[in-house]
Amino acid sequence: MKKEVIDIIYNNYINNGLLYRTTDFQSTANKTNMLNGIKNLTVEENIDECSDKTKDLLNVLTNVGPYFSASGLSGAYNLPPLLWYAYVSDVKSNSKKVSPIGERVMVGFLMDFNKINVSGGSVWDFDSNFDQYGNYPNVPQIGKRTASSFFSQTLPFSLPNKVGNFDYVQPTSNNNNRLMNPLYVPETTTGIASNNKDISDFLNLVSEYRSTWIETLQKSSGGYNEKLGKYLDNNYGTGLESEIQISSNNNVPYNKKKFNPEDLLCIALISDSQESIDNVLTTKEMRNAVYNQIISAVDENNGWIFNTVFDWTKLPVVGINGVSLPAVPIDSSQGTLNPGLEWMKYLNSDVRYTKSLTKNNFKLIDLSKN
Image (cartoon, rainbow, N blue to C red; front, side, top):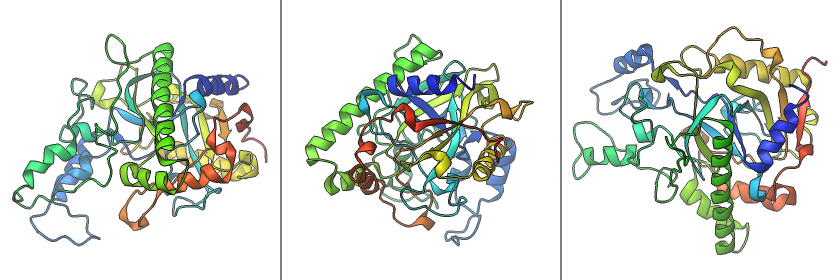
């Protein structure tokens, strides 16, 4: 399997796309998290920004799966390679700060199309939880595939006068505006892609939409320039990557449905450098990154993979380089980030960032070497 994995990954990438997921604190609902959230509620109007106290349960309802979010990485239609990047998953920065362009490395997993379900996806990043905020746990009948959003559902509690001490938070981008970033659904009898062929067909379709969209914006702005970068920042500032909704097709009850380790195709170290991954990280750095990613992914409360008996050494480790990783904000402590303008820097710094990766960008990593 390890010898064949590069062929499988590259063929999926160049024809349809890959589904990449890293630990992002998205997990299934559990009573402990809900009780802790309730215990942090306060009647005070003003809350110190360092306090754990809160006026609502947004922090509990955020990041509840399934569905779980995955980033689409596709070379179909000669798409420029780009993925979601946040410092919390950056190997080089030790999850503490945004690394400079060219020094960013993400660690996560590529999913096996034979083991998962895909329920929908968009050309640009969106919050896959906004369609179902307020439900706990999530249920398949609603399943985060409705058009209504968190913003529209909560706006009536703020206009024309605020109800109680509820504070409405205005969106900062159009990533969750369905008129600017529609949710596409697989064209199957159930609206869910649950096998390799249907998932591949769906990813190819989203790739075609994305390619057409990027080409159209590029022509409208006159190139990969500052005008386009600012437009992307103003409209899609929370993420420029394609987002896909996924879940395991295991037999676990829906609201408890994390992924099995067997649902993973490989571990992936993804770099924005044009250098091979083993020229960017030492074997020790790669080992530590992989180990820490596995530990966080199988965490009982905040993980998204079941911590079952599994020989993780048998899971291939693959390095992928040459992928644009424009930084997106995770919280206000990072200040203002401009992923659109950063993407333009990538695209204008080296022509290789403007077209799909070659097979040489994919490398099987042997972590047993010193």
